[in-house]
Structures are given as C-alpha cells and as structure tokens.
Image 1 (cartoon, rainbow, N blue to C red):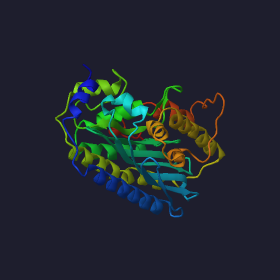
Image 2 (image 1 turned 45 degrees about the vertical axis):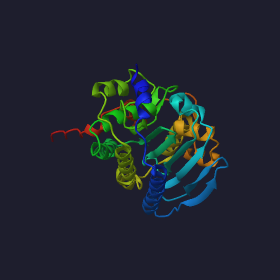
Image 3 (image 1 turned 90 degrees about the vertical axis):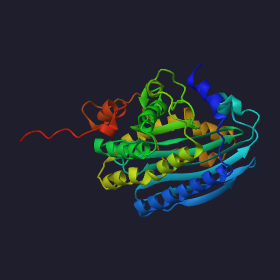
Image 4 (image 1 turned 180 degrees about the vertical axis):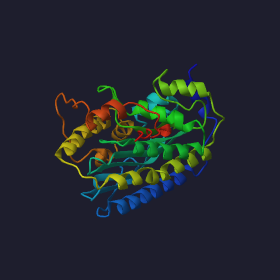
Amino acid sequence: MTAFQTDVTTSAKVLPPDDSKARVSQFMQQLQDQICEGLEQLDGVGKFQQDAWEREEGGGGRSRVLREGAVFEQGGVNFSEVWGQQLPPSILAQRPEAAGHGFYATGTSMVLHPRNPYVPTVHLNYRYFEAGPVWWFGGGIDLTPYYPFAEDVAQFHRTLKQACDAHHPEYYPTFKLWCDEYFYLKHRQETRGVGGLFFDYQDGQGALYRGPHADGPADVYSNQVGTPEPRNWEDLFAFVQHCGQTFLPAYVPIAERRQKMEYSDRQRNFQLYRRGRYVEFNLVYDRGTIFGLQTNGRTESILMSLPPLVRWEYGYQPEPNTPEAELYETFLKPQDWANWTPPSESPV
C-alpha cells in the first residue's frame, strides 16, 4: 500500500474544530492586509486597488492589484473563500473519498512582478480545504529571479527554513524538495526559479510528501524520514500562519537591496523573455489556476498572476559566460541554498 493510500484511510479519523473555517478565513484576510501594507511601504508610490467580488455558487473574495508603482510594475494579492456542492475534478482525482460532500476552500495568493530586472518576481499561496471528513492545508512560496544574487537566494531560503524548523525539523528539507519538483517546466526541462517551499494535502497524518512523483527526490527523502508523529489541526494551522507571516522578512530586504540598481535594454528584454516562462507555467501546470477555473472562480482574479508585459523569442540561447547564462547554469538547477556560503576571498 502506498503512503497516499494510507493517508486516505487515516485522515478521516482526525476532524477539524467547529470554528475552523471562520478562523482560517480571518487569518487569510489578515495576511492579505499585512502583505499589502508592507508592500505599499516598500514601493512608496503604488497603492493597491481593491475589487470585491461574489461567486454565484457560493463565496467570494477581495482582489487587490497594484499597478505602475516605483518598485512593482504590477502585483496582486488576493483573498478568496468559496464553497459549493460540486467538487472539481482536480480534487476528486487526488482525494476520491471527498466525493458526495460539499466543499469549502479559502486562501491568500500573491504574485509580484517588479519593474527592475534585478528585483525577483515572487509568488505566495496558502490555502485550506474541507469536504466532509476530508481537510488539509497547502501552499508555499517561491522566488523567480532574472539576475540572481546567491546571497539573496540564500537569505530567502534561510528565512523560510527558520520558520519551518520552529514547527518540525523535516518540514523545510521535504517541502523545499517538493517545491523544486512542483515549479518545474517539463517542456523546458528547467525550474521556474530558485524555489522555496511547497506542500499540499497536509492533514497531520502519514508521510509529509503527498505529491505524484514516486521515487522523486522529495518522495525518497520523505520515505527516509518515515511517518512523523501525528500533528493535529492546530499544529498545522500554526505552521501555515508562521509561514505566511514570514513573507515580508524573506522578500523585502532583497527588493530593497536591488530596486535602485541601474539596468539597460538588455536586462529589460531578458526579464520580459523570462517572464514568458511564468506565463507558461501558470497556464499549463499551476494547480491553483486549474482549481479556480474548474470551480467557476473569478477569471480576472485567477489570472492576475500573469505579468503585464512579456515577450517570447524563438530559439533563444544565452551567450556563454554572461549573467544570463549563469541563471541557466546555476540558479535554474536545484541547490542547497540554505547552507550556501560565500566563496572565500582570494589572497591578495
């Protein structure tokens, strides 16, 4: 029996508290507020415009978009909560035992597309799902730089690791590997960026890795770890809260360091070209996009993750020994960033 099949059997034995939906919904809205406030302070010019919406089948949300800021060309921070009776196929394929139950899903998601090519794009999503006896937390955060700096990437990962380690020593190594696996463009055979965290179907039971790639690095590591001690709903909610609140200290220092660096048309054109990878991933692979469209979510809010400007170039190849080539050769391959150390200085 696979670990996933075991999880299906045991997850029904642990139920969430009666006020689970209200508590998670409140936190997700508070997280949206906290992130928007921090980003407006960072940008200094742009302000988020809110668009509240309702879903005919049940639920709604708050979409907030910042455009033409000093730091961010465009960014969106969304909150949504939806419910209904018809489960989307993407959920039933993973958790068939949810069939026949009404569902509830809530979450906060964010994508920022900076103006300066030296400031990385960043994505965040934390979510919660219930359908009868089935429930889980999921989400994560990942960084997509165009002209990366190793010290920035290491600082980003170490900040995430610190948050994970406060809750379980195996969260970061497992969810980091899962992130490298998930944000991968199979048709390009490259990662979308330098990773971060990704996890799904976390209900406190069974193995940590619940992804589709048996014998992949995340699955192998999770199997080596074995089945952790059961964690309850409160444990996982505390973990997701900590992860969400870690976004600003993980990302803002990077943006502050890089936002005033000078760049030319060369860097701008490369940024627009690499943004095309972001579009490809979000429209082909991203589960949040698929879930939103399958549940008749608000299309404008679902697709706010796409950049305002993008370009494709046929058969592009970076010139050897350039910063563009370094992105492909070093940063688009999974690395142990949390343990990165700067190279020792050459003797004078």
